[in-house]
Amino acid sequence: MSAEISAAEPGQFSHRRLQFRAWRGTRPFWAGLFVLLGGLPILYFPYAHLQLGHLSLAMATTGGAGSLIIGVLLIVLGISLWFQQHIRTFAGVAAILLALVALPVSNFGGFVVGFLLALVGGAMAVSWAPGVPPEQQPAQAGPAGDGGAPEVAPDGVNEPQDLTKTTPVNGTNGRHSAG
Image (cartoon, rainbow, N blue to C red; front, side):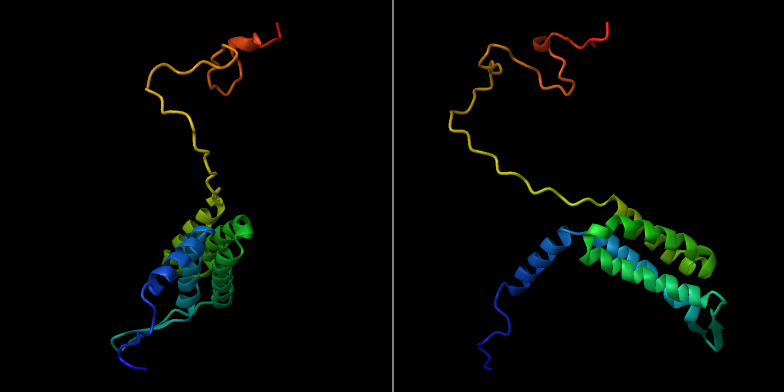
């Protein structure tokens, strides 16, 4: 390989970044990331042996097995949110429940850090909804309006755009027909 040949095509990084952005936009990516990151402290702290100078601090508790299960389940739920976005409601509710169970079981849910991350990620997963692609608007062939009065409908009635469908045209004029 000579010095004149580049290892990557120019713009390949931008192309991969745009591909990742498109992939990330079609799923609850941030919710999965928060749930996954919430599982790490819950999983880590019960098994950690921290060194503070010459003092060894062991955080091993009787809830070590529970912490292991909760942490692994949160990590799996976070990855599942990335690759199976149709289970977002189940995974979000499960992450919230596991975060709440981690409070008494796993050192206050990984010293509250894992608890908060899993709780926020679960809430984001429950509230996420897939976006609707924008529809193509047909181009109008007529000349642009001059900003004057609105045009009148072909039958001579100018109906307002209200959601109740109670216009003077159908005779109800906003009243119910119960009387």
